[in-house]
Length: 54
Image (cartoon, rainbow, N blue to C red; front, side):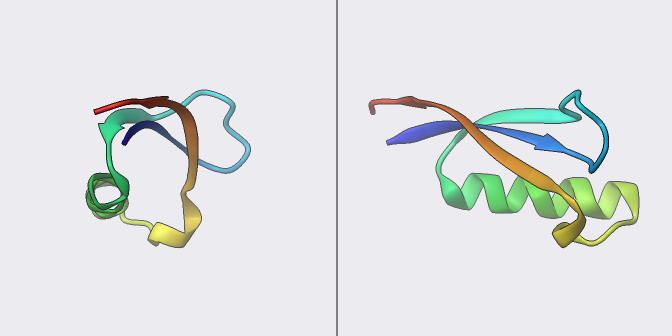
């Protein structure tokens, strides 16, 4: 099952990015975003906003 993931920064209601994929895709994207912004992955909020059958 693939899910839609949205990535947020604390105190910002707009997502900074989103992907559709599995949990491993979401973890990789979170690492990329954190490296790009110079923050820790733990500082990101990751929301699962939808699911898609494979």
